[in-house]
Image (cartoon, rainbow, N blue to C red; front, side, top):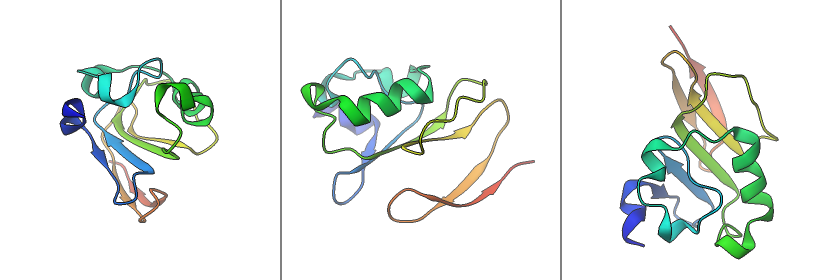
Amino acid sequence: MNSLKRAALGADGTLLLSAAGADATRPLDEQGDAFWWSAQSDATLAAALTHGAAAGWNARTRLVRGAGPSADDRSDGRVLTVTRGRPAVVALDPAGAALERIEP
């Protein structure tokens, strides 16, 4: 759990906030710097949230990350990437759904 200081969990543990994502092949408590440097696609991270019980992802239903690959790689809505190639600000509801997005 020491590595979770590099990310944040929502009050009920289902929402994970990170700078760049996570390594979908490792348990959350073994992420290390993956929260800062992950460049995995939204689809890969969404699959980890959906099928990752063995890696400890089973309680997570939503990942919000600050930055990700520039390619428009939208998932099923389980992963929200705020910045893709240019800065953005996103207002979220308690479940992690985007309420409003502002881009320059």
